[in-house]
Length: 188
Image (cartoon, rainbow, N blue to C red; front, top):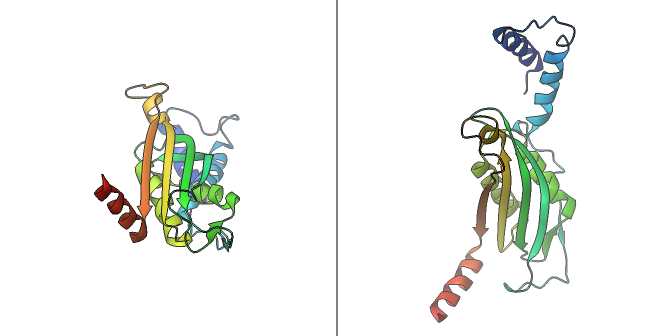
């Protein structure tokens, strides 16, 4: 559970440590606003809501590995680097090959990305958590998640790598997909 009272107290101390006066009229409400913000942007630390996803059966989808790829692109990502507590942001692209007629409502992909993004972490782990969650709950033949993000910890400080993009990809495959790939490799 996120302790907003403790966050407020710590922000007051931070302002004082920076040489600011937390009682200055412009800063008086800042600790409360920051605590409320952290409660929102770190809500992924709480248990996921029960309605995070819904899997449907779609009888018209008869998958073969070459023709039934579903792609959802440019899902917004906003998260926090756990090393410096600065934001990173960008987009998520998700591809999956359904199995057993299982598909998911498209808006649920954005909901999954949003939920897992809302906590301090590294981008590599976030990519893997999203892919693994989708694989474990959607049971596809394969799922691949790619995140492309800009990190303020790289842009505002340190190397000051303005305009840099970090790209991470994580793939989960069923044994069915691995067998198919082995057959294709054997042909070559």
